[in-house]
Image (tube, rainbow, N blue to C red):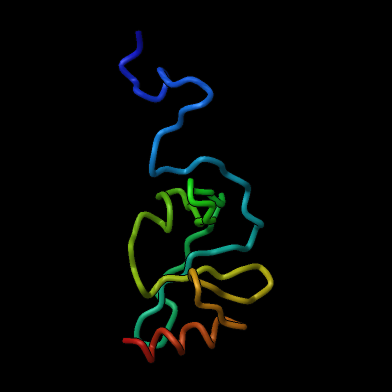
Length: 103
């Protein structure tokens, strides 16, 4: 018997609170961190995770949302638009400006 609790589950059970599926992210998708009106860092999104609530979350090599809970972070898509949960911006300039206004 394995000590791993996930390996003992049958097909009808799943661990609670985690990612239940992943999908490849399009190249050019980044988590962007902004502060004081400028882009501080960009981290490539490699996967989109789907949590058990059906929400898509960006994943980098460091984890979901780059393993940082930061209100100054958002996703930059290859199309140029940006978003974070219920917030959307038409471009990087608008997103960074909104983040600056919120600080």
